[in-house]
Amino acid sequence: MLQRYPHKNIVSILFLVVLLLISFTAQASEQNEIPVKDMVTMVDLGADTCIPCKLMAPILEKLEVEYKGKAAIVFIDVWKNPDHAKKYGIRVIPTQIFFDKNGTEKYRHVGFMDEKDIRKEIDAMLAI
Image (cartoon, rainbow, N blue to C red; front, side, top):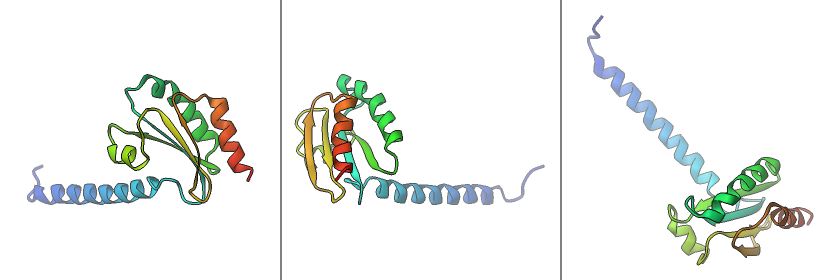
């Protein structure tokens, strides 16, 4: 059966897409607040194509799950987000920056960082 006004369906779909995009953009901007407000935050600035960054990816994914609600683990691809590289003065990737709950930078490391050392820094800040 042919619809008499097929353009109404298209308009409805476009309207829903716009609403979803607005919602996603609002959530993304809240999640992109770095350091995360009132939370210990570890930011890894690297690139998807960087070998040491690729080696760290599974570690960061694991820690993100384990520290959920206690500490934020954030990865930023500086090739896709060059403004963050400039903001944090990144000259070499990967670079990890650790912020306390007040948003103050407490520690910075350049190069591959293993799970044990990342945990050490996060746990020390959580203990304060």
